[in-house]
Image (cartoon, rainbow, N blue to C red; front, side, top):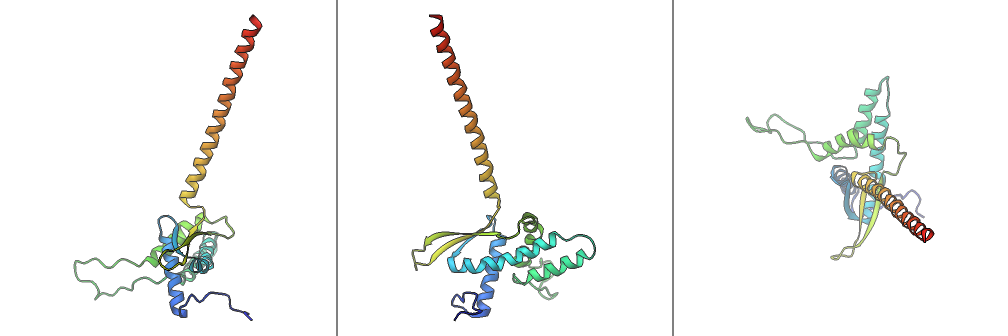
Length: 194
């Protein structure tokens, strides 16, 4: 029986699997297009992993009033567990005149998650990601998939352009029908004059 066996092992040890999911989550949040390409089983495992982090950022956005700053910090720290921590800095690491190393991608992902994505998904109760199957990879035959965040900029542009096309096509149709009606009227007038 499969009781309490909820997740795929993906052929990795527990530590390796969690580290891989953190890397995938960081890549998805930091990507410019809000999408990454990976194998289908990894995408299916990443979906609940990243959606829990996005839910925490949604809760932080919806906080109001008393003690909200403390609660917001608590939610941010909980969400930090879904990403790798930043570089720790020591005074001995940098020499005089050198800039300190930048913070890791996990810190940038956490910042984007709470600043941008929490606002974007504020009114959405769940289902923040979409998985699109791509077919099989030529080298090893692994099934590939795209996992992307919904309501991204590319999707909104496509909806806006489709609205413009439908408005433009309806205007053309009304213009064509008006032209056809005027030509019919002219023919009728010409026939009545004869």
